[in-house]
Image (cartoon, rainbow, N blue to C red):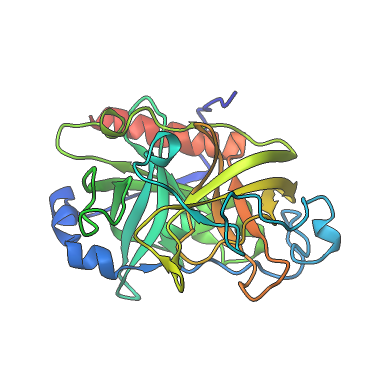
Length: 309
C-alpha cells in the first residue's frame, strides 16, 4: 500500500506565473498539433552515486527479462495503437503540453490522472516540467487525447496552476544519478470542476518490488510511423536496476516521456529514458514511485491543491 508522508524537504513546488485562462488560450489547435516531443534523456554511461552503475552494460542487465515483443500486434519496438474509445487507465492517460521559455518551443509529453484527495493531480516525468534548472510555462493536460475530431481534445484543456519536481532533479546537472528522481506532478484546474470528476477516479500509485510483470506503458510516440496524436501501448516485464525499473520488451521512442507504467488501474512508474533507437538490444528506463520520495511529493502537491479549492 502506498502511504503519503508528511515531511516535505525533498520537493520543489513552482508556481506557474500564468493565469489558467491565458494557458487555455495559449494552446490553440494549431499549437497543439505543432508541439514537438520532449527529448528522452539519454541513459548516461559510467558510475553513479545512486547505484545505477553502467546501466547499459550487459552485466547490469542480467536480471532484466530478455528482449522480445510481448504486446499483441506490437511493432519492433513493442508498441501498438490503443483502440478507441479509450477506457480504464487509457481514459486517464493523455497529453501534457508545455512551453520552454528559453528554447522557445512547445513540447509534448504523456501524463496520467493520479488518484488524490484533491482530485486534481497529474503524474508525469520531471523532465517534462523542468529542464536545465528552469520550469516550463503554460503547462496543460489533455486527458484521453486522440486524433478523432481533427485532434481536438475530447475532455478539454486542463491548465496547471502549480507543478512539483524533486529538488534533486531541479538542482543537479543531468547524470545517471538523477534517473530515480525523474518524476513530477502537476495540479490542474478547469473552472469549478475537478479533473477526476470528468475522467473518473485516477490511477492508484504503488511502489514496485524488485520485478513487475505485465506492465502496460502508455504514451503518444511521434515521428516515423507514429503520428503523435493517438495513444500507443507496450506490454513489458520490468526488473529493478539501481533504483529504477528497466524493461527490454519496450523501447520507447520520442513522445513516450512521462507516460505511465500501469497494471490495471495501478501505476508503478513513468517513462524516463531509453537507449538509442539504433540499439538492437534496446531498453526503456522507468522511474519508479519510491515510497518516501514520491510520498513527500504527493503529500505536498495534494495538500496545496486541496487548500486552493
